[in-house]
Amino acid sequence: MSNLNTGRRGLAIKTIVAIGIGAALVVAIYQVSIPVGFIPNTRLQFNAAVIAIIGAIFGPVAGLFTGLISHTLGDALFYGGVWWSWVIADAVYGLLVGLTFKKLKIYEGGFGSKQALIFNINQFLANAVAWILVAPVLDILIYAEPSDKVFAQGVTAFAVNGAVTLIVGTILAFAYSKIRVKNSSLEKEA
Image 1 (cartoon, rainbow, N blue to C red):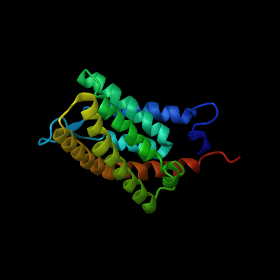
Image 2: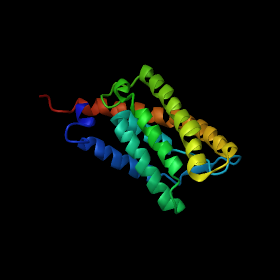
Image 3: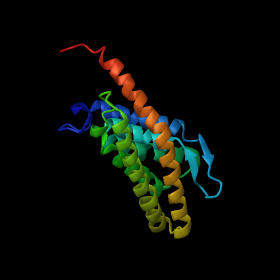
Image 4: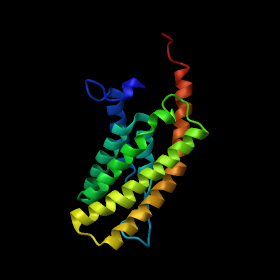
């Protein structure tokens, strides 16, 4: 795992590649969404699950930059402008989910029921911080948005992102961990 973390020379190549692949994947699925009809500008999307998985596998730096880059590019490409409060919220979310990556053991192929519980407790807490705290507060400070609107959006985003990550993120974590187990048995012994 040491090659996944930042070192004396900066980010490891695997981390940089993970950020690039994660950001590209999120941007590719950015428009795949179902509007949550009762709250404006809030959608069910799979972005949160991908950001969470990148953070959970490769660590907080990968999660942060995947969230930051993918949301910035997605907003710029598909909406014509960047909504910075939500970009920062996605970056915070990726960072926070990534904090427990060593306990999750996804990269090592050791993701089991205990790790799934840790992953989901952490992702729900990260979602709460990002969407119930960071995004609404920044919406108010940066854009002077009405507090009732942005907190309603934040609570909705928290619930939707948490549910999507619970289902899709957990499935992806188990699948990636299983793939790592199969691939690690094929690696050359030192």
